[in-house]
Image 1 (tube, rainbow, N blue to C red):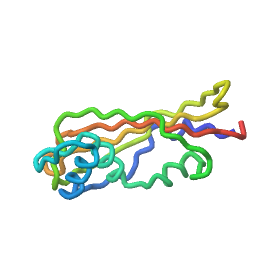
Image 2 (tube, rainbow, N blue to C red):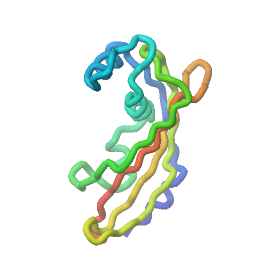
Image 3 (cartoon, helix red, strand yellow):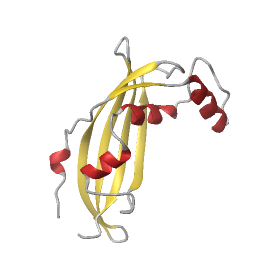
Length: 143
């Protein structure tokens, strides 16, 4: 059974993402919030972080020797805001894997809990806007 501890500290390529104004409007509308031209809905913090990491979801799966059919589950997400997201603004995103933990449960069996962080910064000033911490669960049927 592979030990994935070596992935702790793995940095994603990162990149930039411009939050389209139309997307911020549609997202707010879908969340039953009043669209605001100056402030994006907070849940877009997750979306911006994931879009700017410089990797796809499949790339993360590949690091953990998983695929879409292996039963990967979304565990948790945490958004810590320093500033609001602004529709139309461009953000720089950096991120890395901060934890991999092998666990076992009576009902769940053996699984790996992967934790990674994406930090969203204002592109021009470098000021931190939001930190997005994610935990994904990777079932290990072979264990």
